[in-house]
Every structure is written in C-alpha cells, then in structure tokens.
Image (cartoon, rainbow, N blue to C red):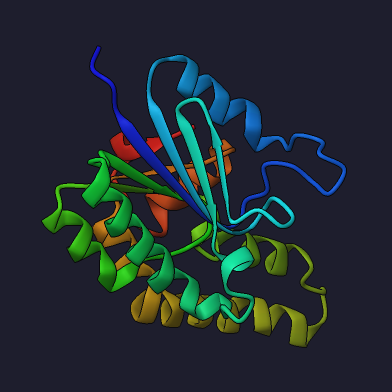
Length: 195
C-alpha cells in the first residue's frame, strides 16, 4: 500500500493540554502514522506556546499560537492557505474537516486533486435534535416545534449546509441516528456515510 498524506482540520483540536496529557485525538492520529501514512494537523490552538509540533510522520500546525487575533469566521480561509502551502511541499491526498466547513473554497482543493470529507459536527444536526427534544408540550412549544424548527432547518440548508454537502467526498458520523438524518433530511448518499 502506498503512503498517503492526510490533513485533519479542526478549530479546537488539542493534541495535549497544559499538563502535557495526551488528548483523545492523539491515539487516532498515532494509529494512522503507524500504518505508514503521513498526517498534517491544522488547528487554532493545541499545544501551549508551540506553533508547530512534529512527531515521526505527523506535523501539527497551531495557527492561534502564531496569530492571536484569528476569528473563528476567518479560520477556514487561513486553514485553506495552510493546506495549499503544505500541498506545495508535500502532496496532500485527503483533507478531513472536524468542525470547519470550507463551502466555496472546496473548488481550490478539487483543483489540486485533494478529496474532502467532514465530520457530522460541521452541520447543525445536533442542534435540531436537542432543540426538538427540549420542546415543551404547551401550545407555543408544539407550534414552535412544528413550524419554526423545520423553517430554521430549510433556511440553514439553503444558505449554508447544501454547499458543504455538495463538495464532500464523505461524512463521518458517530451514531446510526446521525447517519439516518443525513440520508433522510440532507439527502446524502448512504454509501458515503461512514460510522
């Protein structure tokens, strides 16, 4: 099997905390590198005081350590610049975004023949489920659940989320409920949903 180069992007992707305890993300990244692949990680903050952390086949770039004034809204643009910069040095095969939608920028990734997948956290799926489950059984609560949340879903879907879905090579979910919602409500093909 040939060596692949994966890039994982997340606004809050810590590899360790201030006490140098490894995060839950660390073993996943380590297993990918043990399989002989390379990983580049792009996050806002992660390792206190270190903008770049290198370990065997893994390099982590923490943009917030270099520039403290990066707004969350600007993170996707800065992360994309970093992806393209890394791609010039070493070709990237796949980008997986944990919580950052790239929307329009995915065209640049396709131009460089980089596939793009997302974690389901990019969509506001959990927000809808939690809001519906907290609905009260009053007249206003039922009306809000019946009319407001479907309207809010449609507005978000039309204005933002369909762009994310359109450019994704796949989605990673953590429960069958999320997979079913992606299939039914977002009309995403089930063969590209991974658990």
